[in-house]
Image (cartoon, rainbow, N blue to C red; front, top):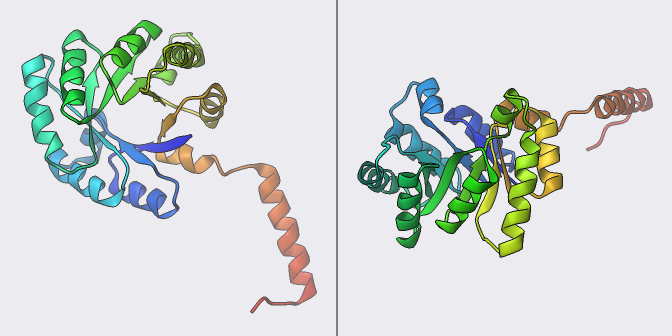
Length: 217
C-alpha cells in the first residue's frame, strides 16, 4: 500500500518524507486554508519535497473553469495531480486532462457507481471518503470493498485512494481489502508505529542492557 499524507503543512511533510514513509501528498481547499499560505506557493514547495504525486484541487464547478484552473495548477511542477470533484463536469475534465497526460484524482466519492464513472473517465485515483460515511452510520469499508471488486472485475487501472481516514484501524482495514493508497493525516500516519507491547519490550531491553554495564562502539 502507498502512503500519502493529507496535509498542506510543509513541516509535517518534510518530517514524514525524511522517514521514508511518503509516496505522495493530498491537499484540498480546507487544508490550504489551515496552512494560511498562498495555494501556488505552498503547493510548489510541497512538490519540491516529495517525488510522488501531489494532489492540488480545482475550485471551479463548471468544466471550462476547471480546465482553466487545471492549466495553472499543472504548471507548478511535473508531479502535480489535478484533483477534481465527482460531478459530470468534473468527470468531463478528468477525461480530457487524462487524455492530455495529466494525473487526476477524482474526489468526494461516496458510492460504487460514482467510482465506476471515475474509472470510465480514466481517473488516476479515486478518493472514497471512509470517515464521512462512518459519520452517517454507513460502513466506509463496504465502499472500499465494492470498488475493489468492480475495478478487479473489469481491469480498471484507476487506483483506490482511501481518504477521510480517521484511525489506524481504517488504514489496516483498507489495506486488507486491497486499497492501493491511503491518504492519512500526519498524526495518524505516525501512530501506525505505536503498540504498547513494543514500548514495554523496549523498556525491558534497555533496563537489562543498563545492568550489563556495556556500550556498543
